Every structure is written in structure tokens, then in C-alpha cells.
Amino acid sequence: MSLSKTRTSFYRRLYVAGLIDAGIATSVPALVEASGMPRRTAQDTLGALGELDIVCEFEQSAGERHQIGHYVIRDWGPIDARWVAANLDSMAATLGYPAPSS
Image (cartoon, rainbow, N blue to C red; front, side, top):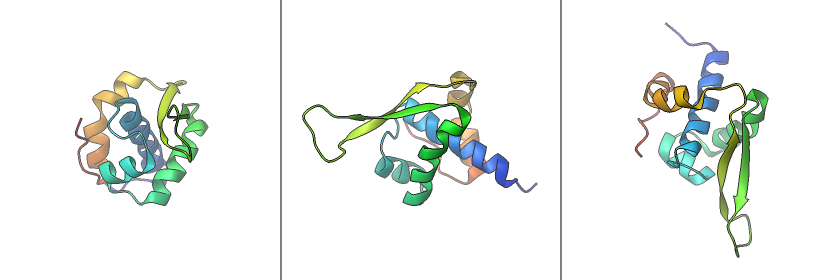
């Protein structure tokens, strides 16, 4: 069965949010390393989380300059964060990404 662009986009957003929430990958370089997705895809996916009402914010590290910090999920909106956490491996396999390692 081939996956629609809608489903892969939805899963990609949930997958990225799940990696951030689990603390597995909380920056763009970490997302690229953990998933193998291109940098631009990781950046675009982060920017699109708001379309699902997932509130993801960048936290500047104390005393640092030049965008040194990490992303955090502040609110999952209508999404069940427990379902996302329980299905990260399945979403990774569906998307062709490596299984997340915590």
C-alpha cells in the first residue's frame, strides 16, 4: 500500500514532535541525525507543527547567544502525546526512518 502525502506529512509531524518531547532530538541537527531527513525537511516540519495545534517553542540556553538552545513541546493540542510516544517506532518504519533510540 502506498502512503498518501497527507498521511506521510501527518506522521512526519507527529514523529518530529515525539522525538522532541522524548528528548531524543531537540534541535534541527539532532533531528537530522536521528531521522536521516534532510535539514530543510526538519526545519519545515518544525514550522508546520502549529498547523496541528502542537505548540513547539525554541528555548534559548541561559547565557548563550546565536540561537543556542533546544525545542520543547509546550502543548500537544488535540493530539494524544501517549499515542505518539507509543507509536514512534511504527511511524519511523512507515516513513522509512531509523527507529528512534532513547
